[in-house]
Image (cartoon, rainbow, N blue to C red; front, side, top):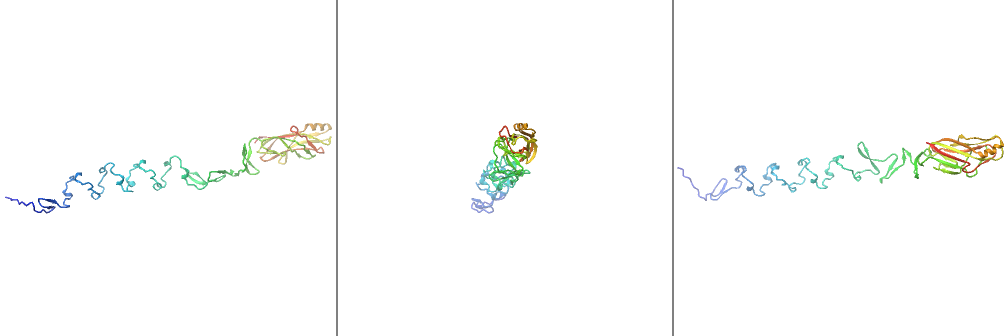
Amino acid sequence: MFTPTYLETAAALGGDLSGTIADAQIIADAVTSVEIADNAVGNSELTDNAVNTAELTDAAVTAIKIANDAVTTNKILNLNVTSAKIANDAVLRINITDGAINTAKIEDDAVTNEKLAGSINPNKITVADANIIVGNGGTGSAVALSGDATIINTGVLTVSAIQGIAVSTTDPTANQVLAYNNTNSRWEPKTLGRSRVRAFRNATQSINTNTDTKIDFDSETFDSNNDFASGTFTAPVTGYYQVNARVRITYAGGFVANTRTYLMIFTEGNLYSIGNRLGLTTSATTTLNENSGTTITDIVFLNSGETLDIRVYHNRGASSNIVTGSAESYVSIHLLSE
C-alpha cells in the first residue's frame, strides 16, 4: 500500500514556480506561447497600450483589422504615402488642398491641350519684344513681323508697303483711295470718282501766226479731281477720255486768201489729232469764220500721269486774239472707262 508524503505548506517550490506551497508564484518569463492555448488571450486579458510595434509581426495587420476611419492624419508619417499606395482615381478634387499642386508637382509636357479649358491669359506666354505668335504645323511659335508691315510692343502696326511697293506717307483726305503712281513708283492717295473737267478762256490770249499755240484755259466750270491746271490735263488713271473743245478767234489784218485755222489735241507734247479746218477763200468768209469758231472732238487713251492740252494754228500772217467767255472758247474732258 502506497503512503503519500505530505509537505508542509511552508516548503519551498522549484522549476517555473517560486515561493512556498502556501504562496506559489510563476517566475518571470516562465509562461511562453507554448503554455498558452490558441485564442486563449482575449481583449480583456490585454492591458491598454500593451501591444506595441515590437509585438506585431511584419504585415500582420491587414485591412480587416483596421476599423473604418481609424487611421487619421497623425497616424501617417510625412511623405510616407507614395503613389504605389494610392489606387487609380482614388484622389478626388476635394482631397487636394487649394494651391497644393505647384510647378514641381507637374511633369514636363504633362499638361496637354485637352487639359486646358477656355483661353490662356496672354501674360502667361513669354514672347520676345514686338514678336507675334504664329501657327506652325499645329503648334505655335513667336516670330518677328516682316514683309510690308512692322509692329511695336504696344501693338501699333504700320503698313509701309503693299506687295513690296512703298506707300506714300501723305495723309489721305475724304473719298480718296490708294492708287499706284508710276512716276513716283509708289502707292499714293487719289480722289474717288471719274475725272470731269470743263475750262474756258476768261482773259485775252494772243495767237501768233504759223505757230501751234497752246491755249491756256484760265478758268474752270468744274474740275472734280483737280486734274486740270494752266491749260494742261493730267490723267488720274489709265483709261479712255472724251475730249471736246471749241475756240473762236478774232482775226487781224483783214482778208487773206487761202488761209486756215484749226484746233489740235496734243498728248505728252505730241500731236494726237486735228479738228475741222476753217479756210478763208474770199473776204466774205472772214466774217463767217470769226463768228463760227473751230472745234475738235475725239476719244483719247491716256496712261495714268500722262498729259493732254489743246493747241490752235492759223496762218493769217498777223497775231489774232481768242474770243473770251465760257460759251465761246472752252474745253471739256471726261473719263469714259478704265
